[in-house]
Image (cartoon, rainbow, N blue to C red; front, side, top):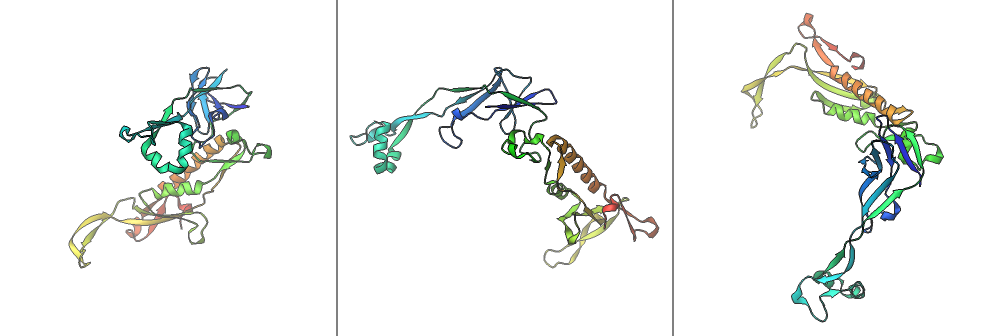
Amino acid sequence: MTVYALKHPDGRWLYHLPTPDTFGTPGFGSRAEVIGVYADGQPMEKLPRDWWAAPAEAGVLSVTGKRPPKTVGYRLTDASAESVRYPTTLSLEEWEDRSDRESETLWTLYTSVQEEQPGLEHVYDGPVMVLEGREPPGPDEPQWTANLPHALTERPEYKHLFRGHIAGLVAHMMKIFEAMPRARYVFLNFQNRPGVYVDLRVPYDEPRTEWRADTSHRTGKKLKTGRTVPVLVTRSLTLPIADRVAADTYEQALAIWDQQVAHWTWVVEQASVAACGHCDGTGRVPHGSEQYSH
């Protein structure tokens, strides 16, 4: 079986090493547990989706595994319950012969006897196909959709090296905006305006305050007590954020993605309101990100 390798820009070698068929079928009790993956006998670093990293090119790639214990019989859990009908031990054949008729009773009285199994080792001896690029995206990173040639659509281990796109920038940015302390509302295509709508409550550039009386919980009337609070003004922005980031490789697209995240975050952070000095604050001059205001 061909082994795919990536020569990483940082000098590491990344190998795609799926668990071999000899370790069993996923989801079944007989599946062996992977204990370690090795490059020339040295442990490798685990990466997402069956990729493993070594500090240099490897001559021998191997994996070791531990088989689950094997059931070899059944043992009576309570010695006082021993009888001709329920002996101290049952062989597998005896258990199978009686389980259809007495399954519930047997599981109440007996426990399985397990036997440890010898370990497994597999050497990846197939040819190695070397590519160049970074590792595939992890589960917490933006995901990649590749425009693969039809013949390669079933080769997900290196699809991030082909031209494609990362989707979901709009949803990602909306989560960032919603977490900002000044944001009140974040909508998509609000009032038929295409883009991400962000409603902000921000202070004046020269802070202003006002007295706000407390309200009685019983009567709803204002009380003599209260507090001084900052005067806030509403800013509304509509941001034309593209949902997809396309590039020749995932690595290139991820760099553009990060630039877009930084840019749109900066746009919202820069939005502020300045009170007009000539009219004592009766007029308001938006300051920062004015091209997105409405």
